[in-house]
Image (tube, rainbow, N blue to C red; front, side, top):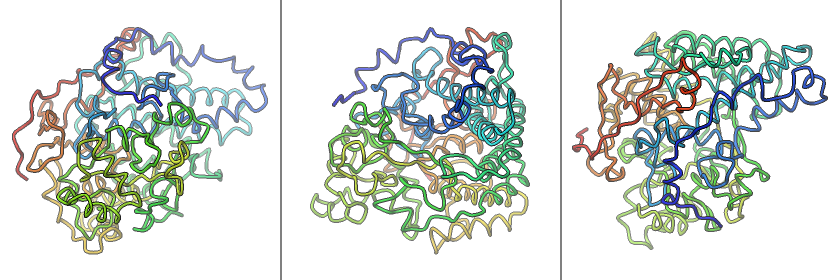
Length: 556
């Protein structure tokens, strides 16, 4: 077992990269000719399948099993979520501390900066290859092309928001990322400026329009491939971002057909909690027992190692090496006891108990209370705030590797209901309040609209949008929406307050207040320097410049 600790990788983190991203993603030179590929039996079908099968499980960034954040798409959920306030990268050995600390290591000459660029443009390149094959011989290939258009739109939605210099709501002309489509030539790639936000989303919506047409009659076998409902969901996300409220409401409602929200038993299941698709999952991915992220390095470089706190085989950064993810204490304390989602995280009051009483109390949360106590001891955090949203594979708690062969949701119907409510309310407040209340009461029968206003630190949005945001923060915790929402709604970070559980030295109450932005600029990711070196038209964002000391205590 290779227990990789952060202190041994700082030198590697500081080494500038000298490779050209343009060369890595050039869609014109990295594969056989279109005719050769088109003539190879099964090649097109396998290329389409790879668009979703390669979302996780491989060491796409480094090629090595020594980077525990290098396990695919769900890693970006955590990279984004720890940049804000709702997720605490706690403990003595947390591999997401660079993002939590807004470190200069996220700057354009450092290795961490390369991670999203490598992953996303590789995925986009794969989509472009499929689309070139489709256009060379389209007959019978429509559904594969529809999947490629949908996936490319999803990837671009992510990186446009991750790298945008400002959110659309503040500046539709803001620079985002260079757009690389299947028609881009090598010469064009060398002079490919960052697209304006509005233009990037025009391309995204164009891709989704194509996907909608091509997938109109497609029937998938499982939720691991996008279908028409996922296309509608991606459109709902896109229209929400650009504040086209009517279309956001329309497509969010269309996306919900055939799905049902999770109930308390499903949400809190000790066996299947967020590890297996159910009737609320619209789109997901799954780790396989043959994946390198599972079979190599004791599975320690995987989603399960980071996010699954229950295992009986003494591996895992979250459970055994001192790197758990915690919920922000203030957010937790704003969740009423009558809201069943509160049981996804361990109550901070348990840290006031003796070990024996604590173990009994933990039995309400987990079938493995001693494991949780052991994890807290190694992380030196206490059990309060530890997440139990994500569970090991049913019945495999103590089976090495297999416990972490789990599915992860990429889109749930609950998100669509919250988009529908927000979009409706921005057109007709009473209608939005009604939809929001109907959803919230499926989680808390005692929910009363407007009761969560003490959860916010600034007035960048209305009471109504604050209420929707609070529901999103609780419902979608750990699913990758935190930074996107903070940028979209222009929210400041608040980490220091009475009884905070944020890490000393990073207890920041940060209102940027530059260019109208309240959210911190470290949420505008830097573009890797090799891209700006070889793409002469590409500009960059500011290198992260985090506060040097803890802030004064904030009063809610």
